Length: 171
View 1 (cartoon, rainbow, N blue to C red):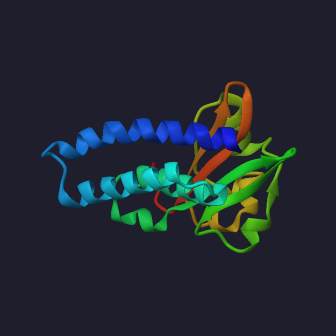
View 2: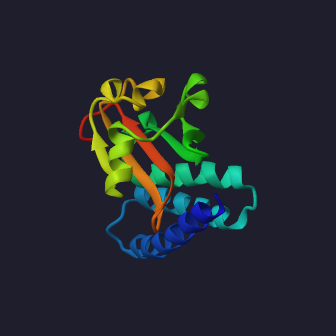
């Protein structure tokens, strides 16, 4: 977990520097500038905290904020950070998940998650109810598009960020 947190922190710091350059340009509107500044605050807090559970929650929120692209419909974004605990994936942070979703354990071998691990790249999907693993996560049933981001460092697989939205072509 510490390796994943370190990798996320390093990547977010780099993104923060490039996003700060964007906020200085006059092309951004006030709401976009405010949104980016909120992301910067979260990244700064992420780097300052020693509570790993808080870091995981913040990593999910920063990722969700980056994915929303300043759109008002982001309030319907469902997300989860699932990390391996032994051979199984467990939800360690979530956004709009049901109580039952927090207890779900997945093997991470089939469907969208398995495809993301096999390719090492983000993968889009459209039907969570038909996915052999994601169908067990009730909060994703209303989603029409999914995004699965594998968390890999070298050849080591740590877990996935899983996001869903009820609007098709959201990602």
